[in-house]
Figure 1 (cartoon, rainbow, N blue to C red):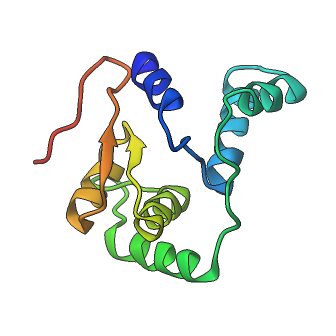
Figure 2 (figure 1 turned 60 degrees about the vertical axis):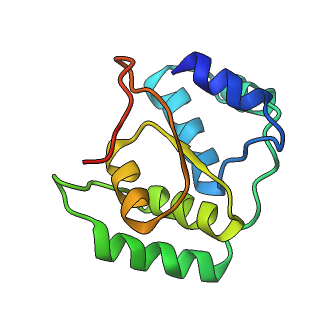
Figure 3 (figure 1 turned 90 degrees about the vertical axis):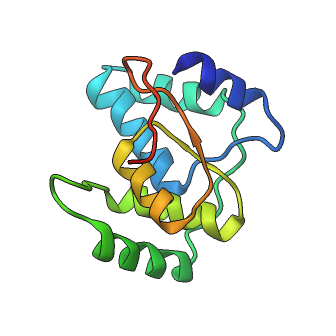
Length: 128
């Protein structure tokens, strides 16, 4: 996945994270990887991502409804942050890059454009 992500980071327009995506990345870097707070924030800043836009109430509403209609604890375990990312991509008419198979299934069902990233074993999602 690293090579695919590095390629995305070099593309124009520059990729972006949602505000919840920023929070999620920092949480994982600090909590799971053991990075220091400042180091994690600096690493994220140095990626040169587009500044995230504020979460619009319309996007938030649609994200909540999207999760309400698609979530299942085993068959489609999408988080609210996943749904915010999906609705943000749909609203901005940009592709959502992810390796998350549940989120990819949701985007497929909702006709949201995606960039499929390989999972940690190098496998790429395909629609069922």
